[in-house]
Image 1 (spheres, one colour):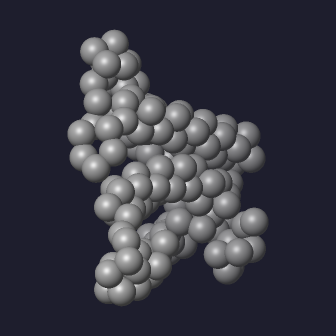
Image 2 (tube, helix red, strand yellow):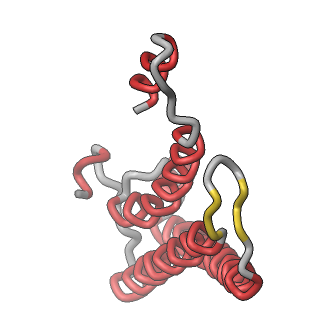
Length: 145
């Protein structure tokens, strides 16, 4: 769409002034929407140097600590995001740019994503406690799919 917008604008035919704004919103939604899936599939950036050089029990402890910190951060982000989204909904806040839209649907993406991230971190913690082993990272990013 951006390519088409540039071509049409340079030809003097028309343009889509709302396109940049929609692109920003889509980028925001896709980033927050993909984060839980990326974590679940093991496709996130992961540095296992410390975990693999430590003894197994200590490596598991580091993994559990990282998952616990991730769970905590997700829970805090989700709670704050929910409060902000509900606040903007109750006030009826609008975003005024090229398009005029309610703000809360965009902000609602944050607590939804954070909830899914917290669930995934909790699942990882439970699995590690049950098996006594951390989930291995896939050898290739697509192996976890």
